[in-house]
Length: 241
Image 1 (cartoon, rainbow, N blue to C red):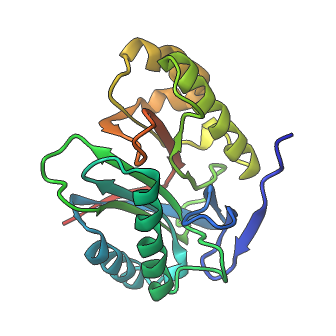
Image 2 (image 1 turned 180 degrees about the horizontal axis):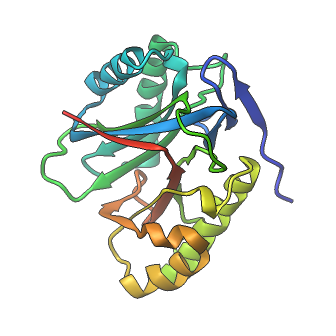
C-alpha cells in the first residue's frame, strides 16, 4: 500500500514540500498563496560548491532568505554506483546545512541530478535553481517544482515512461497542483524516441502539452537507471551569466 505523502510547511521559504526522510532532497515543493517561483539557470553550469554560493547570492539580491530556495538542477560527468551516489549525497547535504537550507533533519529543496552528454561537465555542477518570491500578478496558476523521478525498474521505454508519469501525478496531487499549472516538462534519457514521448508523455499532459518538451540527452545519476523526468510551474525564467 502506497503511504500518503507527508507535507511540511517551510514558513521562512514560503512553500510546502513533500518530506522524504533521510533523503538529500524533497519530493517537490509548492509556493504558498501569494507567492510565485523564479526558475534561474546559469548560461553555463557552475561547479557545485561555487554554484550553491551563487544561489545564495541570487536569492539575497531578490530580498529572499536562503530557505526560499525550493529546487536545484545538478549536472554530473557520469552516472555513479550506489556507493558513489551515497558518498556524493553526504557532501551535498553538508553543503546545504552550511547554507542553512534545511529544516532540522529534512532537506526542503527539490532536486534533479543527471549526467548530460556534454564535454564541459567535468565535475558536479549546478545548472539551475528555483526559489519563491512574492507574486507580482494574480492568477489561478500554482507555482511548484517536482524533483526528477526515474523509472521504477528497467523495462521498455513506454513502460518506464508510464511509471514515471504515474509517480509525477502522485506528487502533483500531493502538492495540490495539476497539468494546467505546469510551465515546463524536462526529460532526461538517451534510448528514447519522439514517438514514445508523444504517446506516453504529451498525450497524458493535458494543456501542459502546449509547453512542449525540453529533452536532455543524458542519464540519471545512478548507473542502473535510464530515464528521468521533472516538471515545474514557474512564473519567471531567468538566465544567469
